[in-house]
Length: 489
Length: 135
Image (cartoon, rainbow over all chains, first blue to last red; front, side, top):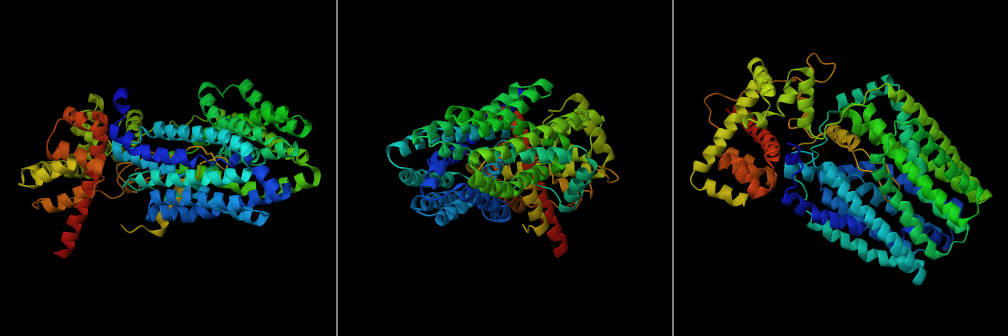
């Protein structure tokens, strides 16, 4: 059966292709590796870099609501296109910037891009997979592929951007990005948006909020894990946002920025690959990760060697990538599925909220005392991450992880097997399997037992069968059958 | 198709922001999409968790399903779902034939059929409701 589940319908591959092309082109932001170099050139100091990061980080949570409403009520493809337009405009304003003010405006427009595109690609991939295959079984595989395409684009653009800046100028690198990003719009325009809206997000407000609240106050582990997720995210963000300032302080040549950024970005993908191979239940491994991130952060304050600084940042970024994924898994396991998405959204928002004051203080300390001093803030955050990691892992050891099923049907079968009976909610997932005689003998017996004693499910099954009968009659009606066949081909 | 403000807020909360840096982020997790709205069932803490909150309304006996209504319901399905329903339920093709035509495995066809038939059932249920109000 697992082989059948893994089948890749051609239609799905074909349909997701333009989306992936769009995501790849949108990932070719050439100016990212040399951004801090350019900013320094047009008059930024460490404090204004921190203020820029804070302004941008404040925009993102504010736009979460409007971007969600647009995606729900209008079109998700067009939200992606708007994101792309925002990225193009931001790059263009950046390219034309000669002062701190205009560049901060461009960074805030970049916030629009981030708020609009983050999460939208995921939900569009999810609904497309459900629409083409009837279940979410292939979602992980396809979102993984999309992320891999995106990461490859990031690495490629980091190398290309560094070279371009070296041989032309930083400003030209900004201009060169504009047409590439604008091309991504074509990919999104050619993508056929799923008609299914938020198949994944059917929850009622009251029960959702009540359950979230109840879990928050009764769970011992949840608050700690939530903070772990947020501080690991904060620290990782700080490395990516402020890491290049060390290179600026050491007057590193432009040619270094490309490979440096490519390596830093690739830690995100490598972390994802490594987490599958590492057993983070082992204390020794956890201790190594914590020590690595702490040593990495401290080295940033101690050394003045460019090679050591870059290595330390890469090690820190990699350790944080692994800790971040592990933390989100702990979060995942600590809450029931009904509120999982809401809680993880809370973790994400908390990261942004913490990041605003963090970057303001970081920038101020860096200007007053040099970036090496503000490096201690990273070390402090690394200590907090380490402590939270130790306590959450210790507490979570007693908690059995909530097993996650990829599809509602798998979940239904699992629940029915462990409860030795089928409830209505599980039964409705199994109707087509029942009618196709694809259930195990045991499950079939339970199914029939339930229908015999439940008026609701008897009516449900009866209506479904009635529909199948009527559908069959449609083909007998002259004219309509052929019309239907035409739609099918 | 009226979406209430409450539903919209929940969707926003449930959307979930994936963690990440300014340019790269982790993938979002979604609760598995269910065939029937999770709201239609009782939750933990209710007297009968996972059972119907309100039983599906029985359809009027003796009233045949109007083919035009059924066709309208069929037209409202997402294209890939309609394709499978037409091949399997209208034309009565076999699973193997449909696999050859669409590339969908038997399992995937059943998943599509289960959801698509539920949408049709809901559509027809609403139509019966409207008729009973009119008469």
